[in-house]
Length: 193
Image (cartoon, rainbow, N blue to C red; front, side, top):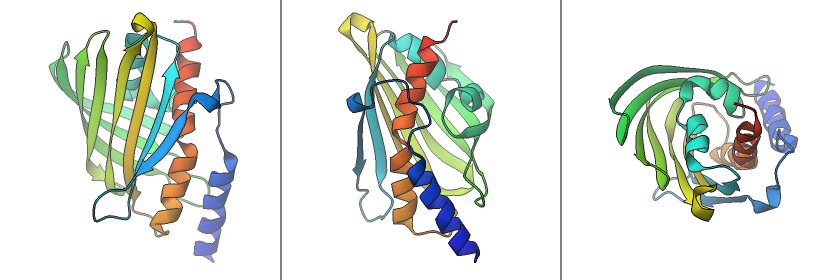
């Protein structure tokens, strides 16, 4: 009975589609890369955000505000930060992703390396420290376009939560939600500062 309820909840998540309608979804590319010797793929979303990379970076680099700025995140806390915040530093974060009923939310602690070449390239790459996942790592890559007036965003994530559902279903649900990441960034940069 519980497996049936979880299956229904997962299909509801897949059918829900993007949570944010603003932005041109046709300009967003979603893909998957197979990972060697694993059934857990890397999901990738790419798109253009009409704002300078530094403006987009303000949202991507601040994990403490992910509950306000990222889709499906219900709680987020920055645990620590160290290094030279001008070029490269590390940030430890605890982030909770909300899942539909009857599934439990997923919390993970990750360690991210932030690298900045102002106006050119910004990156945030993280790995799992602990939490409700067997695998949780990925990257944000922001690159300036149009003389730095726009940002080409690439978001990659490879996640395997500790949920007893087929990996293919989980990967499909993740892939279905990827466009929301770009759509939310587009919404965030439009808000008054």
